[in-house]
Figure (cartoon, rainbow, N blue to C red):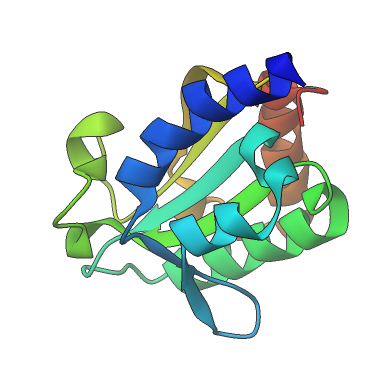
Length: 153
């Protein structure tokens, strides 16, 4: 219990400050703030996170790449990790652009969380340029997620 409370304080309190106004969109198009998401279940505090960041200058392949990312997440990772789709140019509060050095119209950032602590992040870039072969796209994304997040979900 003490370990859980410590993890809650270490991971959740900073997350609540950062996540207060950021929202994500689920597969049904409904939005909720990250704070509401974390409040739904204590188990959410210990899940690694996959962010799909996009901007207002969308690219030709961005919508399809984002859709494929959601499909891969639902098929393989929905019970292990959390997924958030965030327009980082509408971010006036949390400065994701500087935090994750976001520059492209579509970037995936994986944040490793284990036992309530953040253990770094890794980016996947240029996914919008890899949608011509859906099988290779899925294999590449799964390899990158499994290599970085492993069994830390």
